Image (cartoon, rainbow, N blue to C red; front, side, top):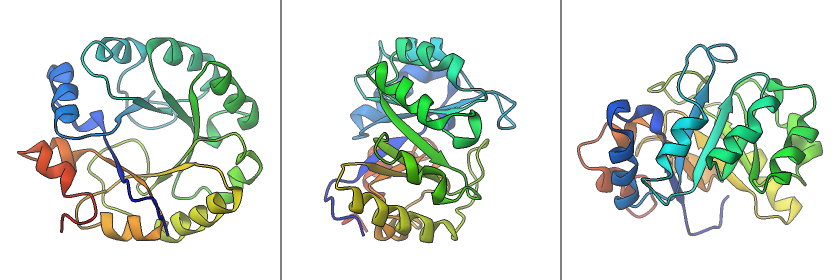
Length: 222
């Protein structure tokens, strides 16, 4: 179980109004968001296309929130420097998106960014056992990546708990994120399993009041 009293909430811009991205970023910052989560999709690794480094660069003028970039692209390595230069503070990749995960994580850190690894629902925790010393973030996908608004896959709770045990064993401060189907109804079980960062798209951007929506995800609000 996560013992960190501070639960991070990272609204996913995928669910925002794309015609008003700057305003949306400012609004969730004012509403109490900790990070701004950016789903980068290429239409190849996942069946959707979103945005690239230029959007991140533009958003930096509108918000001081850390930019949490989730690269759902393959290959990822050729584009990492561009996302780092654009202003992404954290860059997370999938083990399946390149042949050498260790090298990819080294590259991200060499650019002064926090490296992360993302585990799809069918990706086992064994995929990251040998790179735990290189990651600052581990993200569990509790839906299949590529689209927002999907239902939470309950089988991922056991994976979250196992990863929390692995993180504790390292003695390192690794953030354990969960992305997919996060709502006030699913958040308590996710947090109880050990997550300390909740990524929420429609639960925040689909709500009439962003402040209330973000607060509802944190313990003590229910």
